[in-house]
Length: 439
Image 1: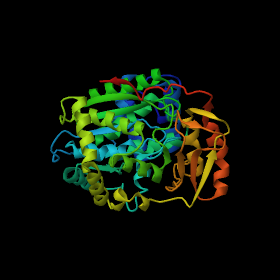
Image 2: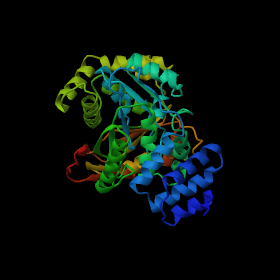
Image 3: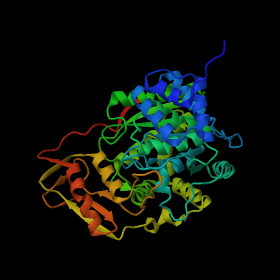
């Protein structure tokens, strides 16, 4: 009896109706995306079907493998040591990778990092790196391996050879409201991370209004799925749940976030940003066998900051990737918006909350993010938080500073930024940064 072969449209309809796709059917869909047999609009329809109907673990593993093998899996066997990467599920003000990678590399653990661009209301590591004049995130895989071997860290975007199916799907999800889907997030993250040739991975799964996972329950489900699928692929994986009920650090925007990450390398930076960097970095050092405990690892990271070794690694990495290393010692070399406009408080009291989603959307509206897949970002614009959560303010005092091209551009978002701040008559307790660990 002949076996019926469904059309691609039938497979999309099968998932739309809640059916389960086999490994072969998922592999066929991803191959068809690569050959052009499956159009982008059809892939968008499949993403929406997955968004509403979900996928079980076996389907998610099959999707991850299909996307992973849509391109090359890098061979980093020439790089000595245990290769460890970190990935964040995305947050507002999350510039951790920029200071984390050089610090971990300075402690002896190689960090091959393939990163993404802004997604929805969250910023992207590549956009922040490209705020550095001349920085090239589009290196070929040979250059990537060489820089990791020689310097200890390299940060690039997906090339045409690294999980190309994910690159296509990632861009479509951003503009079709299908970002917040656990199977799609897991497959996207792990397909490109496993393609890097890493041995271990630390995941920063954000929780809260500024994250894609709004509740701890959903974030934990995502973290557990990521750990399960990653371990099924033979990798050592740890996930941390971290708070994203407010902006991480004090800046949102590409150049100003890069500046803040550089401050951490010089021993400064906001406490929450420093703590997030140390917590993730410590897990990376333990997985990389560079420390026997989290406490020992944190001390090594602090020493890499105080000695300047982390900053030197960042300089060398920037130079190797075509950028201007002078930004590390003089962040004024980064792009600067020509105008700044202060956003005042409309009441006396204490900053009880800052809505990170509203801040992130305001930054996108200013041009720091994208509303279309083909849109360029303005590296210079952004939002600087002047009154962080817990700070006392008086009516008329500044809550935030808008870095804009013109005063008129500030008018379009000033009210939205002001309304993101909730001022109360008395201080309120803030949640801890670290909410859980899954390993």
